[in-house]
Each structure stands twice: as structure tokens, then as C-alpha cells.
Image (cartoon, rainbow, N blue to C red; front, side):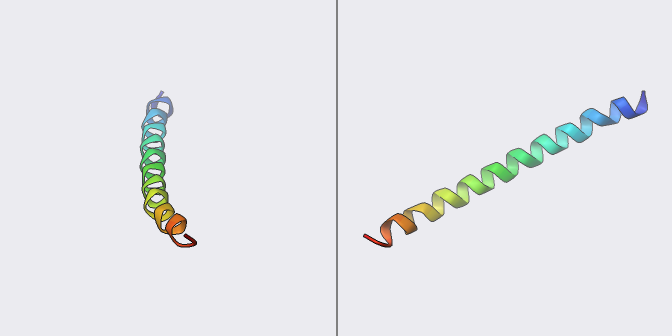
Length: 41
């Protein structure tokens, strides 16, 4: 039972970590794309 109780906590932490990483990547891409699009033009 202890392992089953500890599993959701790990899943929750993994989900939060994935969401934070995705948000950081999206923010980096949104901040990087304008420079790339404005570079050639």
C-alpha cells in the first residue's frame, strides 16, 4: 500500500516538471522565433 501511495506523488511531480519544462521551452521558442523571422528579412 505504501508504494501505491507514493506513486501518485511521483506522477504529480513528473507532471508538474513536464508542464514547467514545456512552458519554458515554449517561452524560449516564442522569444527566439521573432529574431529568426526578422533576421533574413
